[in-house]
Length: 503
Image (cartoon, rainbow, N blue to C red; front, side, top):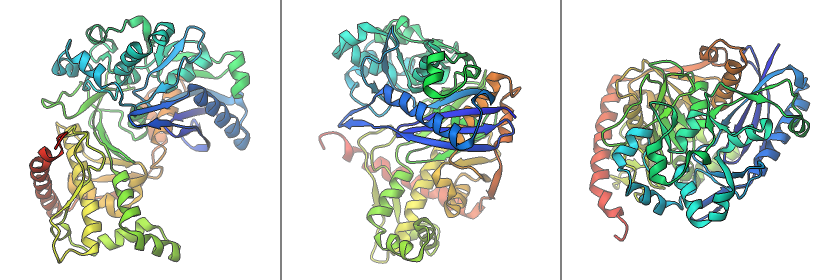
């Protein structure tokens, strides 16, 4: 039996997961690391990433009793849209500005003076925004010029671990996409965007396919992390694209919804999808020749958790007393209200919104409250508000309506009541796999297997995916929810001016 090691380098920590070549999960280990956040700034120390990588690896090997020589390859799913300045000697020069860092607003505007938003979008498939990497690099150039000058390259999390393991400055197309600086047609750095940002290509790593063998593990690195120098290092992908693979979206007409703190809908296409209003984005897929149209919601399970913690204190106490899940109790209560939630609409934009509005200033609301509104109506309205917005995301990602079904992953996928409602909203069968929280790790493991020759292609993900439940849409509910989606859109447009800065 050959083994595949996946590392998922997220915002809160690194999760190491070991899989057999048959797709069975052997075990996992998680090591957390700190986030340094204040106002618009959000940073992490790359040395914490490396320490976590070594700790998770050693613990996983020890707990599973696995011989390091039996691990064919290691690969990665990593947080995206960051900027880590690394010197020629491979030393981090400062903490990484991670995806959540929003300080580079002026840099975004500077790029806009040289390249229009429309042209920018049609090159990289994403908006010009401080969320991304090239704007963060330009901020460092402006505010920390001595660090900028010393930097050999700017990397993302997984790229830094690859550097530590192999000594090579590399990235893949998905993370280059997250730098906001790739040309989607060539999958190489865009001269137009780099010229607009004033950043030379020499400051960026070489782009190689996700399944490329980055190299073998250096002796010193092997000693630190506990892996064998026989194990191949396969490049990997950004976490969003690793999730595409782990959710089984590896061929035309396959797609999924990820229900986490934020949420996104994504599918697989054979060409970039450019929305006339720039509401959706397109990622370079890990599968050669394919792309991943995507639409993201800023706060999904995050909004649900807010409601649960602030409004449903009574249900939380009851769940603890009865030894049950509060999510189960909330679903039962929501079911007491009829579809439409007694006329109550919940707008879940508690921390601004990405697709389709791209409005950081908008906020959430309960609308349509009356003296007859019940607690069950409020609970149900939250599920419906989230589900209707997810329906908008699916519409954007699947513009050609190719999807015969959609897979749910993430923590929210474990709620049957919600899964059925999503099926009704999108009017598609919804499949929930047995492993709803392992898509990133499974995606990285499949990339490792393809790169090392253990698998012939990405269809090997079928070894990892096993259906747990399937839900089918109710046509009458779909008609109601589509009407609610139009009503929600009207309410958003009516209230949008109220959230303009200075109002």
